[in-house]
Image (cartoon, rainbow, N blue to C red):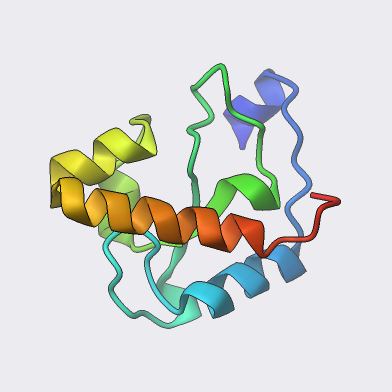
Length: 108
């Protein structure tokens, strides 16, 4: 979040937003492994280092396992998924991520 503050990016993610995300996913948004909420980390789908990053907002956050979060760092999500899991898995996960973001209220 330090990078977000340096760039004056929004930081509006609430505890309720995070709880909704981990409940909806019930695991890692990237690899799909089922994990309890306490074992998931917050990940920016569009990395904070990207000029297109909207910040730490519900519409840019998904839960990730430690392994995926640490191996994604600043990669665009599609590139990360294709490199680590292949094109078919990437396409599937990107569709599910889009579906998740479509469930969020419009005010985010």
